[in-house]
Image (cartoon, rainbow, N blue to C red; front, side, top):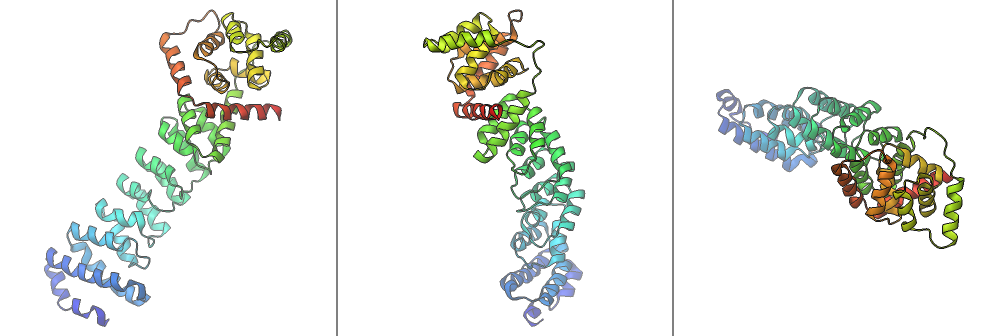
Length: 360
């Protein structure tokens, strides 16, 4: 190949002596020649460059190999054997550029490297434009926290059912991962519900706030189903008398927060539920389930949506617990903090979903 002739004389002697400085110079020269003409090279030319560089590059110093990796990482017809050689280097400054960006690395090579190399190599691969289910399966199995989070945040990553199930389990102890995974549009509804079931209230609300509008509906639906799973009261309550009381207040123009606060302070459960139902538009059976559940979160959502003050919310929380239970001050402070952080728009969207679901 005539264009390489100026660089080849004495090459065997240079390689035999193994002078890193001279080898680096030759490597840079051949690489420069390749980069300049890559667009017009035919397969036989690529093969020649591959043969030359794979023989020289391993004997050059670290800096020279890292520089070469950066230069050829994005070239679509880069010498394949050389790319594979660089990708398998233990030093991430060499392997990283090609693992992140090289279109020459095929699926088999990526999966193979993911199975045997360390966390830095896995982390570099999470930056690729596309990650196959086979590759993410390995990442989820072997990756530590940063790898898992980055893979889950990659919009071009695809996950198998097994991979998603493993992600959901990992997210049970990682709120950041929960929010990241929950925003993925390809996460099945069943797993979204499982993801939110194992998360704390503040993480759920944060996920809802951060999700795109199209995703918020799925999150709200899962939140509603989780809240709706609360156990039914031990006995069926008769809400008819309470409904008549609320109707009379409404007709007199006295149905509002003051009346609700009075009911809650007096531990009048059915009247409080009927009042909340009338003020929020959520049917009584749904409000009853939410009030009887094991979380304060649904009541905070309804209260925020209809603009209740903290004093009324506190009375409703105490009503839920019953007169025989006195909560710790720290617990009440925590509930108050959660209520204050909850945005009205978020609460309104969730309550709107509850109304629609119960009507349907």
